[in-house]
Image (cartoon, rainbow, N blue to C red; front, side, top):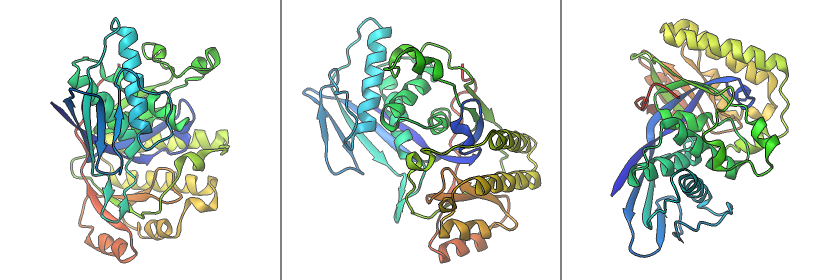
Length: 343
């Protein structure tokens, strides 16, 4: 039997700009996540989850190439890792398995916005790598999970995949995959795994030990795919975001909390000025207004989901204020860094 724990993720800075290749975001992996257990099966394969009402029964070497049901992320991850191993390891066949996915990414009042779909695809790749003793390098595992996610979601920066794969806090620069899309209409195949992904960089950051993260979950579900669809961001926005994020990275490395707080505020202002009005929901407006002497901002796509604060002192008053306004709070522990190098 194999059991793996997979972190959640929290975007700290650089959202939206990072969906354009070569731009940078900062993300943290959280110890609030999910676990995946694999056991051998004597019959067909099956999958179970504490968040889904229906089981999924399948043949592991004959997964269907369609991704519309509740198991679509699991299905895509199994398909991509199976096809990659088949190409790269002389037609290896997987044995049938029993999968159990147990998620803690939803709080008692609803979704926490910590990236459940990304965690699932990373989790399947990690679990299969361990269970079948594939010994895949971490960069390969990141790319496999990324392709699985793209199969289903069709877009995104893949920063959540990187954060969850590598753990800790990372600076992530999104890859330019355009050469693959131009070369092949059905480009989402394992053949691009072993090729360099231009502009991709994943850099671990030394998060200060006395800085803690507080999540503020609004439980207003955000649709990231819809939020970024058709959104045209000016070159000035991308350039300014890159400068701001680089400054924030420097404040993390030097553990300069005051300048870190200013950097987050500048990033938030840039996002607020360039995104539609619905980006800041009423609860997120309350959350932002409460961050007078504490570093923090909206996390991720906005239009709901969550914000966060970073504190190095007592924040009981902030917690009480958020809860008074129906913003669920959770102190976030950063998941350990898995490996340092991304290549």
